[in-house]
Length: 161
Image 1 (cartoon, rainbow, N blue to C red):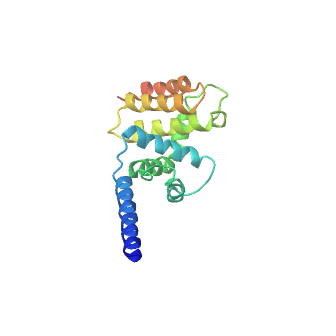
Image 2: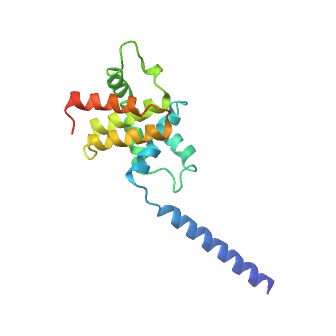
Image 3: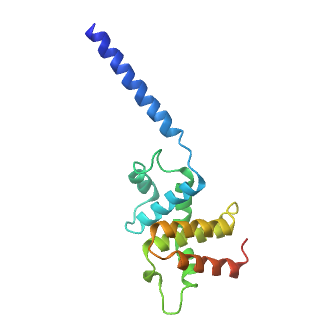
């Protein structure tokens, strides 16, 4: 009888583990949450020079359900054109300012938003700017106006919609 109880308990544990695995796999993230994951990966990457795959593996436990494929693809795209994005952002800084003067969270937010505006046709510029400002409000201290100003100038100069 003791064996029967142990087998039943083991089966229950396996079923619970399977249910948990299924629930994790079924977690659906909003686009804002995927964007926030992308921001977190970019911010993390500003401290290390590791591959996106390694970042995703290292970060997958931080995010319920793992790293979104959308966030991963966006980060890969941003990293592939990072120098171009940084050049664009540099062009909108006040005279005497350099990228090194921008806080790491703000730079990651700006890179993310400029990438979305320039390369993702399915993301309207107004949405990219609004989401960037919200991220700046959440992850920086008083830099949301700076982020909004840079992105607003970029959009006006490039006729983005």
